[in-house]
Image 1 (cartoon, rainbow, N blue to C red):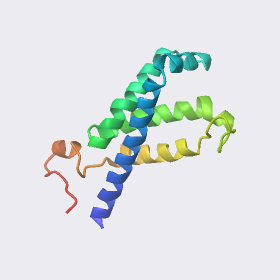
Image 2 (cartoon, one colour):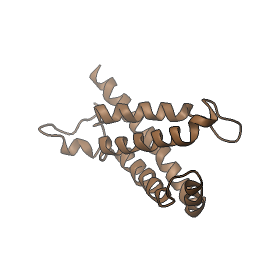
Image 3 (cartoon, rainbow, N blue to C red):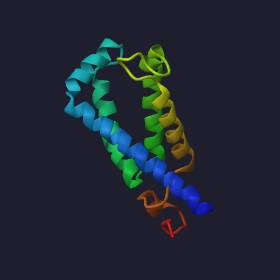
Image 4 (cartoon, rainbow, N blue to C red):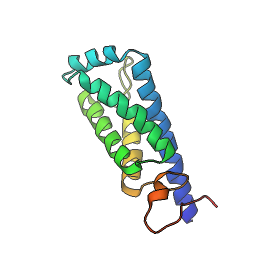
Length: 139
């Protein structure tokens, strides 16, 4: 049963990492300056667009690799909470046709909090630094 716990954490970690990595890439490919302008328009300093996009990009990759899982997850929770309360709450749970709602954000917050509390050590760089234990493996 313990393997199921570790496999579940691995799946959550990798999928959350892929999702954040893709969002970070999209912000840079779509024109990070445009995102910075939009941040300014909603009352968030424009430079934070660069901070958020970089955390999503590098943090997403770190989650995929299992490096700094708890720290990265905490940063993701903060980003998602700000996005939810600053933008998404106003458009509703399912959105308004032009913008997605906060239903996905809630799921991602839940996943990130799970990783923040429990970590994920299967097939991860973090497992190499876990005190007094061998790297956790699937088998």
